[in-house]
Amino acid sequence: MPFSRAAAILLPIVIVCSGCQVASTDAAETSAVNLLTPALPSTLNPLAGFDNNGIGKINESLFTLEGEPDTLPKIVPLLAQDEPAISEDGLTWDITLQEDIKFSDGTLLDAADVVASYQAIMDPRTASPLAGTLENLAEVTALDSRTVRFLLHEPQVSFKTSLLIGIAPSEKVDATTPVSESSLNRTPIGTGPYMLESFDSSSLVLSANEDYRDGAPAVRRVSYTESSDDNARTQAMAGSGYTGTVLPSRLAASFAQRDGFEVISASSADWRGISLPADLPFTKDPKVRLALNLAVDREEMISGVLAGAGRPAYTFVPPEYGKYYNAQAIFEHDPQRARQLLDDAGWVIGSDGVRTKDTQRAEFSLLYNPGDTLRRDLSLALAAQLEAYRIKISVEPATFDQAEPRVGKDAVMLGGGDTPYDVDTQLYKMLHSSYPESGAYYDNPSHYANKVMDQALHAGRTSTDPETRADAYQKVQELYVEDPSMLLLAFVDHSYVQRSDVHQQWNTSTTLLEPHDHGTAWGPWAKIAQWTSK
Image 1: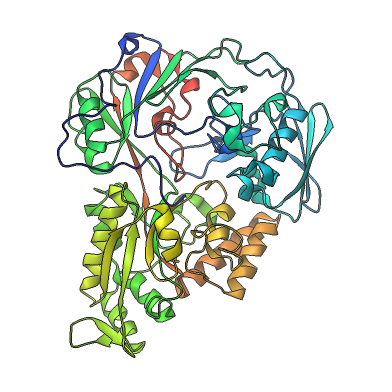
Image 2: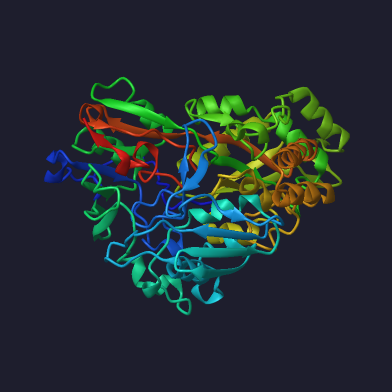
């Protein structure tokens, strides 16, 4: 989503915060980890989108993520016994489940649970926010008690990312009821290493699943205490018994030289950039879009606004994507060429110092989520940079609902990379001409349409040959830098602060390449169930 609920307003002075109380006596428990989080989930239902990226602690998925911090993770079997058996035409995916896996209520996992979970997401009556991720799924059926068949409309290698959704017991799934009304929202039942202990407006506590198939996790209890304000979380982390938290990079950097703390940076495919309004004469001009991409100094923004915690974003594909990343598809910072393009397009400096063309001014509003200081600061930095090119940007706060009807004439500071574990899921919705009509307003918000681009995206999505896919996505990036639809700025590295004495007790796990949605469920605690005692 473009606006993250986990974002918080950075206040200059902090007097009091309800979420900043001293950690409970559980902080002294040697088998507990206490985390301070910007926001608690609104639901614990995997069918409503909770932990839908393969690292669910309560509800596990058919597959999970495995890899190093700076590479695209592999999608490997978890509840599945092995890799999918895929038909030659790429349309049929058969998956066999592991034997004797139990839900926390003691019932056995079987194919009916998987079928019920996916059918519920697909059914319009449930209004599941995950329905769009299954748009290519025609049917899901149980061949027997341990075998599930997924039938696709067309071949799609990236369908494997759709196998990262948590599985719920069929007895608790109702495909006729909206997921917002499901009992799983507050009382989840899963096969994972943790069970729900308590959940209220200020905290979420998970406790070890004693009957977990691999044995109960060594970290017996994980608690999440909400504190929405960044500054307040910084204070609380510095002066309490919390194990760790997530912070904006500038605030996290203040812990780097403090005794007793460590700052952990996680690479991500989480991008920030602005839509370029399709109905505004200035921003719909292809030469202007290219000029803006050449004019902006991304390195300056990363150094200043992100305190160095990020990498330039030229397209939607970060370098961690390996062979799918086109290292030549970049926009060199070139102020002279940017000004020349603007001049050539007829946008010349007027008497008031702002570029104009046929009475139209080179100006637009840039909307940002009022609760997100990073988007605000990036917006202000961009406006300051483009002022030197005689382009006027008015930076305005706007909520999700306020921004949607204005996207045709106003730019929006967006973020993306929701399920970035295949290059197709990072690109298709942002560049294919069937969007945004087929999705939400932030899918291809600039209404970009290019037949050659559509063909390359389709070839990459439907080809089962790895080299053909790689060539297609290399082509996509080549096309994009010739005719960009948006102004991408940076891939944001996520910053976490953790007490350094954690390593005296635990053998911890590494971070993964992270999606847009992040926080204390990710970072160094993404796979906390794998921690072992020293």
